[in-house]
Image 1 (cartoon, rainbow, N blue to C red):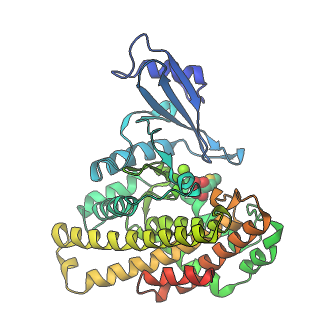
Image 2: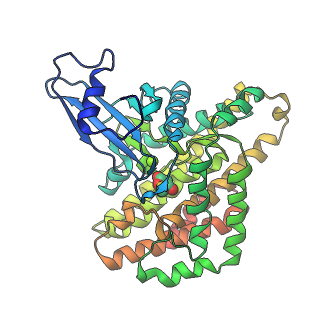
Image 3: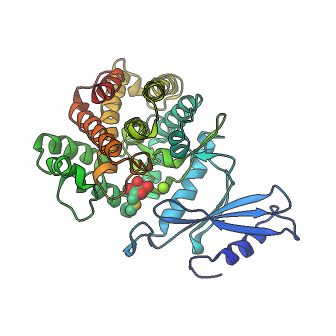
Length: 401
Ligand code: SR1
Ligand code: MG
């Protein structure tokens, strides 16, 4: 196995036997390819007779969701494994352990988290995760603060910007999130039932102006090392534990893009409750849980980020009274805007979310799509006026009242 090729399950098993200190020589190994994302192969390797197991994640040289006609760099596997190791140092227990990275196979060998579930699936099943807001706000505050000019040596940061230039994956985001939904692009995909709403996005110049600002921020604001794709499908969760996975879209960008991804995806589930909840009572209760979580994510992030700034900043002049408040308010506004962009793209763009797409009843699905678009557009249009996270909650409630 000296040159790159996609592994077969037998090869994945054979490779796993070579990982030091993992399996006994006589282990009876099975492999299941469990990759359900848009881009990669994921092998779950398990010993039938012990609890030993491992995950092998291999990048494919194209986007699996589209096919071989969309080539994609294998370097994203290096980026993912290196970022996981940085995040693991900054937030022990909030990302999977990386055991090794095999460059020529674009293969990351990591901790098996199959006692966790993908958060999107858990939310769709109606589960609540009371520790999530605390965990994810710690992840956001620590990874964003300590990789920014506030929390690390500014020359070292510039080297890290270079290490994580990720042009091909950024281009996917620039197109799929910040361009295609706002024009008649062949990449778009939406139900005929909402064609009028989708086409209205193409001519809404007030919306385009705000999206252009947000896109420009994404392109130019190398503020911190982002996860880059922090939706609820990138979170493995149990009632006690949260693990952030899949940072292959990582690069230096605006912090609000990661915070907005979390909030936008909770709001997509909020919209999806139109079909996911069976009773009005459950729908109202679950939506309130989601809104409470959104508020706790932001307030937890803000409190932890301010504490890191107060106690650890490496930058003398950033301690000037008033600057921290200006910075945090800009972050809040970016968070609103990026959350909105994340919502709109998941309704009319190339890649959707199961929270809405899996709704069987056509009328409920259409209502969920309209709610998501209403919230997304309002967040984008309002983002530069935002002063409090409560305004997100108000926008969401107005969309379902
Ligand atoms: C072609 S990749 C489509 C989407 O999947 C990933 O999870 C990212 O969100 C990307 O935009
Ligand atoms: Mg992913």
